[in-house]
Amino acid sequence: MFLAINEMKHSKLRYALVIGVMFLIAYLVFFLTGLAYGLAQENRMVVDKWDADHILLAEESNNNLNMSMVSTNVFNDVSADEKAILAQTAGVITQEDVDEKVNVQFFGIVPDQFLVPNIIEGEMFTNDNETVADVSLKEQYSLSLGDRITLAGNDKELTIVGFTEDAKFNVSPVLYTSIRANQEIRFDQPETVDEAPINAIVTRGQLNDTPDELETVNIATFINELPGYSAQVLTFGFMIGFLIIIAAIVIGIFVYVLTMQKSEIFGVMKAQGISSRYISTSVIAQTFLLTALGVMIGLLSTLGTSLLLPEAVPFQIKIEFFTGISGLIIVIAVLGAFFSVRSIVKIDPLKAIG
Image (cartoon, rainbow, N blue to C red):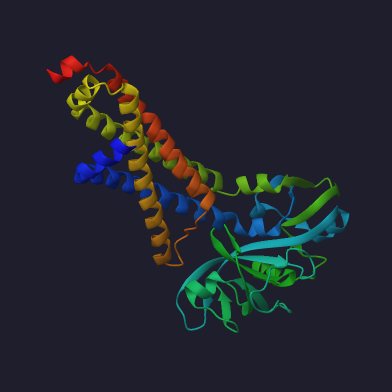
């Protein structure tokens, strides 16, 4: 370690460039990880909040919530510890005197069932003309309590009476309404709750009995089969994985080139009785320091960047991911340094000195 640190102090510019390259790669990896995680969470965020175990969908829906359509009457035929009705409709909303349109998801629920959202501002809706919205609509589009929103292609108007948090589905903010209001939004005409078609029944705890016309889907399976979710996660996963491998290869090449440039010095050290093991340990320690410094600077820069990003950017930090990636980059880079160790062992002091 002493030799590694002193050499880095002696050739500051050379090793600063190596650290700079590691910083840029680590920064890119961390930033992509934050984007990938944030985007994935915005697909599934509201489902995670349910803390549910199963969702019951129509058999022919192919596990697609939007394509599922069942009668509300089957709700009574489901036997579970806890159960809740869910009606879902995608829509577009506009605000009075504002031209901007926003894609949203309407979730029709029954207020006394467990799908009811936590209210962080305002109150729960009490009639068919009120809604509780995700707080992102307030942060990104300046909507506030009491604002009236209009549905595109529909005469229905809703008043925002409350805000909740972490309520996004398929990257769109969720607006909670009554079942009757949801039917009016979707079918342009209200129906009684008993007659209204719904999309799913969500259950929590033990599921004892279900009607034959419903398919029981585990929540984890339901999330993985959300449109585009798995493809998105796999794409970012492979991208981040390859970047980590590239980072390790780059640092390995740098260390190898630096080692070859110092072969004469290492030859002199061997002639003086310094063992190959000591020199090799120094190279590995140097690789660890270079990688760790680059990764640490990249991580701190990513955390700083996250504070400057606008609310519209789906960037989220998960410390467990960042810690794991940091460790993986360092470990792979150190393993790559063993190629340099082999060349050190093969150095002949007589040939190196000339």
